[in-house]
Length: 466
Image 1 (cartoon, rainbow, N blue to C red):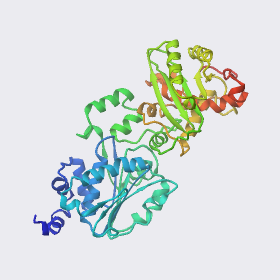
Image 2: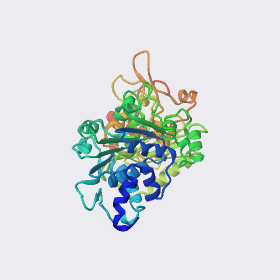
Image 3: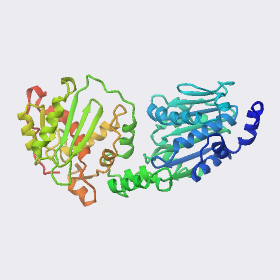
Image 4: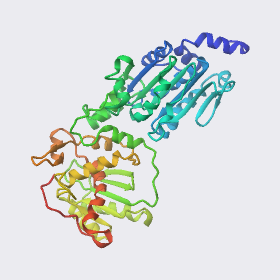
């Protein structure tokens, strides 16, 4: 193409052929499922929804679609959103900028790349890509978008609050408005879920499984299969691109944990620091340590192969290595069985330890069978708060979303025991139990005052080991 006629010829060649645009203008070779997606977009498909496993190229495909649309559908407005700023800017917008750098120089010069926006230099208000975080507090992320050509891209759509979709209804209703939803299918409810189920007849839908993607290694699939099992929610969502099993008797739904892992939450330095320690009882179990500062779980870890005194030494070394302001004010240890020895030794070494007997009665009321059940439901309530955050740890996610509950004959709620989990072929939820122990802080102080006034174990009427 001659330089002076470049753009006119460019539009003529690529206006209806995004696959050719990707190949010749970006130097990439899209896979079959990416070609199918781009071709459907070019045909004017207005509502497209893709659920996907991890690493199948969602952000890349969306970036190609945005650039093609921006350059070849003038005038236009492209708005891209995600539930958190990290998902939006560290993933999607970073990928978009990477592909802008692959464009020919003649096309790069047509674009002005800003911190949260890409504009056509000659018409910055008539042709642009705008990044807007989709939060419940700011549901207008996709609202008020009107142009001859509108493209709305919702990344990680499963985690976007419903209020955002409600506010976007006007923008999505135009004849030339196209909505693309792409996501790991983490939640079995909401607009994204409905687009693949009840409303599937009105949406173009596809599932991109890691097993079918050349971008995902066989080793990743095998590792996920061996670690979590074929029927686990972690495998269904992260590998197969399927919605999680939502048993009515599961305590913590998948989407609560996944949302907390990707949330932008600041750690307040003056927040109380609490550690939970679940001591291994059997050969295949692990000792797990969870650290919580206020509403943020700052770290979870586990280890095997240490005896009780070595476990004590590891915890003491970690505690003493921290400056006083970073040390826990409470170290809550499951004191059933071997844990009681750890409690005694750590107390002897003057750590702020408390033994928590999770088999005893709950701290208050008759809702739960025992303290363990109460702590699991406290953990659920913690995750339901929008101001909490936990680490991005697939093992923690799998364990937290595996525990079921039942009702006793007296109507009390009982969390599934470790033995009951083993009968279902599941391992001990060591990280999750350590996490739940950090929820015992309020329960521990409710009976006997502040830590300074009481350093004994938390003891109530024993109701059988969970």
